[in-house]
Length: 186
Image 1 (cartoon, rainbow, N blue to C red):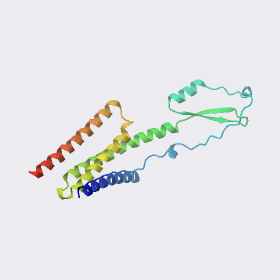
Image 2: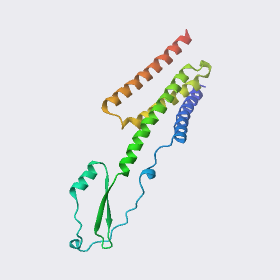
Image 3: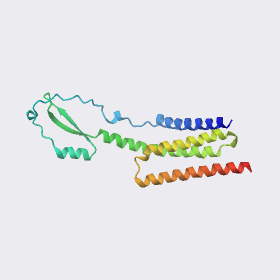
Image 4: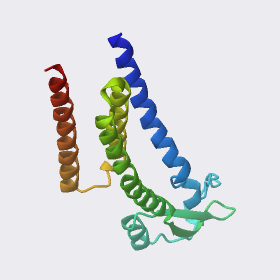
């Protein structure tokens, strides 16, 4: 019987975390690469047999500036395969900025949801302990998922503070659950 309760808790926890993730994605969709960048399939330039026949001068300062600003140099070719123009494309940078902003906003939505699930799981009646444990696990999994998603966008100290707060939360949950369990046996 105990195995059934554990399996039920695990099932509820995993499904609750997945449900929250997919619900938020349905309501607040993530940025799509195609919304920021055209998918350009580079057509190979014709082979130039004699490089001397091309008279394009590459602008090293332009290329360095483009790279420094996280852009990508795009080239246009003539019918002989010679470069005739270069532009700096910032679509990748724009997409990354949109993704970072989205992840930050998602954190502000998902972290409180996970926290509420944890609190809700703690205070459900003891006769549905398997369900309560599952909701608690779902909240913890939701917090782990959003932490992993935003972790790369945070600074060194922000990571430490976030993980410290989450560690304190998990310890508090453990103490709360363990103290309730010992109080019931007496």
